[in-house]
Length: 197
Image (cartoon, rainbow, N blue to C red; front, side, top):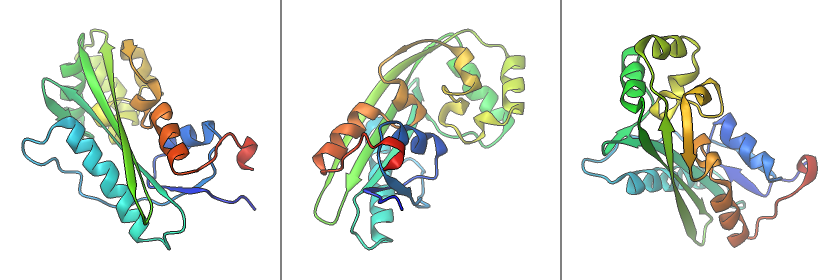
């Protein structure tokens, strides 16, 4: 049986895959938290608040033996936070607002145990090619944008929209690995296990 060294406060298969990529041993337990931004909240404050809230909620629901890692990602264009689209119209509007322009992706990672908490925030610039509405509608039909901040997945079919990225690719997917590694090291969690052992 594989021993877990931490809890990932997420149901995201993408975050789990990234954590597996660096050889971490973990279990997943997601928390249902309100992701509504507070009026006037800066993007960095928003993602940090949610990453911490997710981690703390999961910690409270466990026996507290293992540290908990939470993460949150948001897409920002023209100082607007783009969350997950609720409809095809919303997704198309989001994608068209990103068309032919650069936007910022903020991802926060937070680690907590019963004694302390620590966090890191990653900011990445992503530049999209020019899109047309028909492309956006066809992309929506694939189902991929439905649960993605900004209505696209850089690690999926949405990669065809991306002309340039400056910063952390893994952060845009949902978990900045360099920053996550720092936190795991800080909390004494070892990685680089082969096949989870």
